[in-house]
Length: 243
Image (cartoon, rainbow, N blue to C red; front, side, top):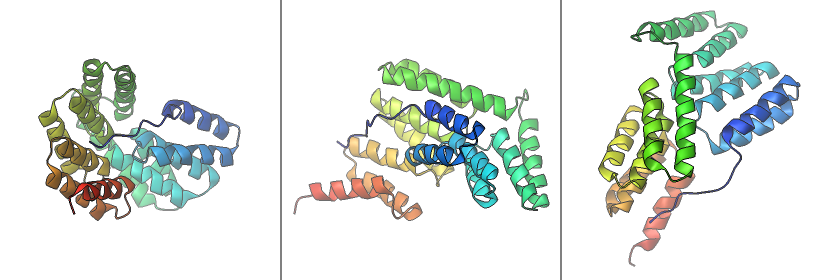
């Protein structure tokens, strides 16, 4: 069975706090170095993408700022702070129509909520539940961990990373069918979020469905031909095949 990496890194929140401190001090080079290291380990974390957008805006690199802010909103469509940062960036480069469009879309998302809750607030609350879920999982308290992830998703259903975390937890609890369902739904809704298919493939592999696992990893390579995990897993499986 394929093992997931347990490499030890500082908590994301700690590293983000360090980056914030560098930015406040005007040490933008150090902030960029810190954020790039976090982003490399967590490429699909909306908060990191938003923070990188803020950094590049501060550096005057508006095109890179726009790129990261757009990704933050794609990862979390309810991320009001990232939407406002993107609108400001569009204004800075003279794309006033795009800025107005982003603000209008953010307002529409808020108005559709019943009762209305600012997506920025709900997103922050969801992230707090996710953090608690991560702690429970590290302690081996999987039931408590899954409960926290469900609370997070009740607030922000579109958080693909939390959906995948819940799926991994359910798999570790032995609820394989539910894990498969979670990964499959996330992969269908967010084909760009490749970790859902990676985890779906791992789950199929753990059940002995090797062909299905290979199919999922092949789909990942269609999105990202250089995806390290997909290539590594496929190579591993092929090496296990009888000559």
